[in-house]
Length: 243
Image 1 (tube, rainbow, N blue to C red):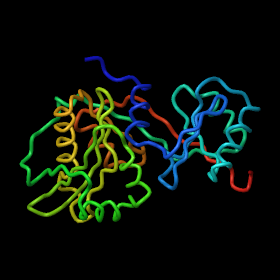
Image 2: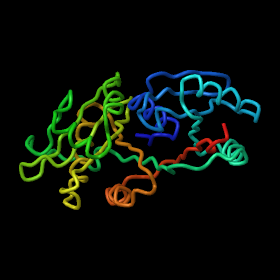
Image 3: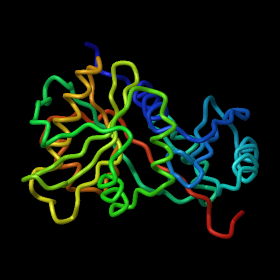
Image 4: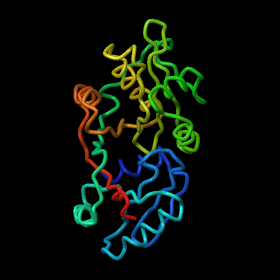
């Protein structure tokens, strides 16, 4: 099976963590996030653009009451340089990893890894502790692809939760949160291996995810499990007081 390309991974991100609305305007794709975070509120370019095209993007984002925010991918070096000259700051450099689901999948007892849709109340509590509130739960609700959440339990105690959704051969993992009291107990590994098993059960060959480069613990876990760094992206945010 051919590994997923960067384009396929970005398409899977959009499908499994969708914006409330997508607007195509000139060379731009604008996303209306309704408070769901940067990824669903960012603008990406769909073809080459010039400095004058920036006004189209800025006006479009302001029209939906969002501050100008651009997602910069690996092939956007010229746009990145243009935004830097305009005073836009770099935010949240992020890596996208993937792995063959068959390579890491493990079938844990039902009492350890519990699929649930809609999510259980305890999962909502764990997410809330990690900063995943109603706006991000709404993103999960609007996913049209096959999806589930997993509650991970350790020693009969709820320890973590994660959201999964499939897009073609790729299952994307989102919103992995481990309760603070259960960190450094291999809970994240159980979640990843359980997610890979769900992926296989739903016809997906690959498990993928996005993580900020600053999250050292998560990056170390994904590398330990043999995940491949596929591509990276970051955001450019509008200069304060500049618009």
